Length: 91
Image 1 (cartoon, helix red, strand yellow):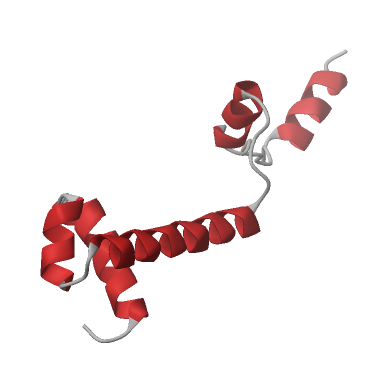
Image 2 (cartoon, rainbow, N blue to C red):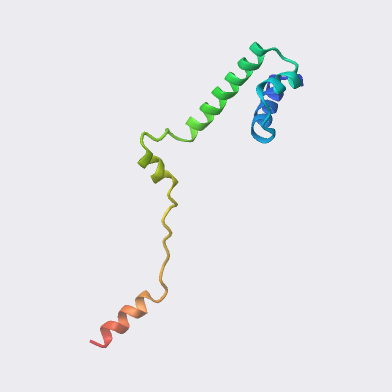
């Protein structure tokens, strides 16, 4: 792998999918510990920047739960108008 972008992608994929240890990833990338931890640090910064662009972090657990709640679904009852008229007509 030549570019840092390729290395970053490889690190992310190795950690998530293959669940390799740091030392095994360093061996496969043929980099020393300093270069590897710099690469990981920059990768973490990019991930953090991306997540912050999606929205501000939740301040409390209740706010987090509210964000996870599904949007309410609204529908129009096709019978609503005729049902109301029928009820009123019989009175």
